[in-house]
Length: 458
Image (cartoon, rainbow, N blue to C red; front, top):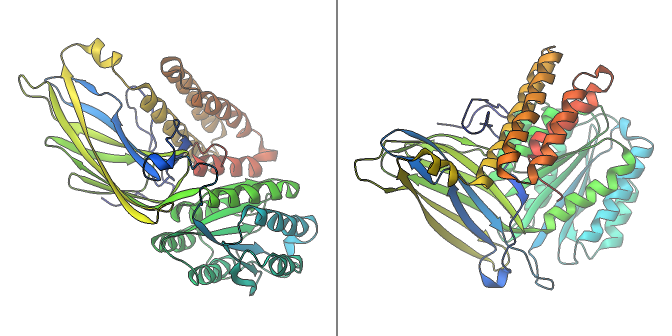
């Protein structure tokens, strides 16, 4: 079974969560539990568990297996991996004035995140493509800054070609032990060359296979958020919306900071389901399901962060006298960028069976329940976008309002503090879909919500 159409989300009633997302979303990334210093182990640690580790015996069960890879907290003073980054800066005519000035200031300021060992290149694009700074060591700061300072607005927006040229610069120094990243800034509609979300998504997927991710930064109200989101998601990058040019420097700094916090890359998770267990779908992550095996990849793992996805499983009834069973064997392999070596880890996930329903509820994992709730909120946001785009304003508002109520119910049971922020967001979005004068801006925030998932603070 191949992944669904990009950004396609499917809502479905599931206990104890009203809906979950099933689609091509980025890995859900949240603040991880306290991580051990990297000196105590690898740069990332595999974790896996069931939402209901105890199930009712003698009947068929639906189970949710959460698989996460948690990046280690890097101790101060430990040398991080090198970053190989290209800045792709829109210099079309619409960038004239404060936008271009902010782009220049923001790009120069973000360079402070880099060490002299890192690699930097700068590409500017309008209807033509210019290599402003060929790939060079960040120690050549004056040369890099001078190139950025000379940027001036020009004509149209050949966004696709700008990304392609950036990839060529990144490839010059791309290695498996570097973080290879493109940071793309645009304020307008791609109108030269390939310009559909599908075409940019294919480009992003190709780059991810090379180990290159694309972080997209949309500035103002006039860019195509569908295109920018699809490019980011397909390359395992992040999309950021910047409403005001004055805020651009902060967001570019955050994106550069994210690149410097990667501790592992090229992670592949493989789940082999046990006898009588079948994977139904993968929630929160692109994945391939072949028979009873699920395979999913993460382009990169951030330090002190949890990256997770959930697999919905169909579990055959337990046999007479069977009190436990192996549900899945979970394996991960990744490139440890702190030690420059390949790491393999594995876990076996088992379930117990009981004839007491109250024991099932008492032993449920509240953290996994909360994470399913967070995924359900993204499904609701995407559904609301579809309704609003079709002109059903009240329907969109109702979906988002119901989403906040569902999250409140889960929050009371799980007491997970991450849910309150999402509850507030869903309430705000329910109001915003009913405000036509701000819909263009509100839609961009909603697309950002989906692409970020619950990414909090990188």
